Amino acid sequence: MSNGVVSSPVVLPKGRPIVGLVPSLIGFGGAPLGDLYGHLDEVTAQDTVRAALAAGINLVDTSPLYGHGLSEHRIGAALRSVPRESVIVSTKVGRWMQAGEPKRDGSGYAGGLPHPAVIDYSYDGAMRSFEQSLLRLGTDHIDILLIHDVDVWTHGDQMEQRFTEAMDGAYRALEKLRGSGAVKAIGVGVNEAEMCARFARSGDFDVMMLAGRYSLLEQGALPEFLPLALEKKIAVMLAGVFNSGILATGAKPGAFYNYKPAPSEVLARVARIEAVCASHGVALPQAALAFCAAHPAVATIVLGAVTPQEVAGNLDLVAQPVPAALWRDLKTEGLLAEAAPVPEV
Image (tube, rainbow, N blue to C red):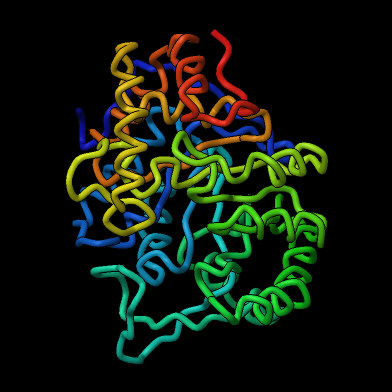
């Protein structure tokens, strides 16, 4: 390690193109840089982003929500150490930040900036969010811009209203930004495959980020959304592929699923998957990443990290081959959807 930056011996595979942008198979997720669940010191945050870039990761995803702007600030500082054109920057609209008010935070961020978030999917709100992101990131353009969190998970019974607002407002703003060249690809970032499919049928989108709904544990996006993405040539960025941690830690007491302690039925299913993986000498997170990368709609897998060592560990997992027999056994035991694509060996 030198100055906190590690270079990985792994040759990182390329992902699938997103309207001419060619991301690395593994992208860097900026949510933890917003002090998600705990405070992260500035030096470690910067070292982690730089380690990802030095290791060949060329897609960095963030959002105004992450630490109420702190993640974008930290990523912007790290970007100044590399040529801007060498990095695909992805961020989101749907919230803009107020200044000069006490912080009211129920989002799970332990720290972050003292700027309350205003949910706003209007045209003007999306433009305001975009302009704030440019300033925090220190750039004059965004490569990928996503409408964030228009789903039941976030908005409950207000989701229908938010969807209408987003299509009538934010979507028009993103279309204009794409047309002007200020943004290269537009899409949505949500927690529900059903909403991805609904947006895909409602507008002209290039890319969609789906969190948690296509993984080794659950394949809810497989029947409808992923085939639709292929049909419409929508690139998919997968996030939450460890389902909030349980596919990284295994079925141990206190393991998290969907941001909460995993229920007993989830623990039991993961334990069965883990046993099959162990019988083939494969680590559970290694199998989780290999599985997600195999679907032809998936352009990149976005993984968070809070240290350079975590970045290197993620890349080491990608480099390890997985025997074909593992996928066969998972399907035989009913632990994996029969129609799910698996890696070619």
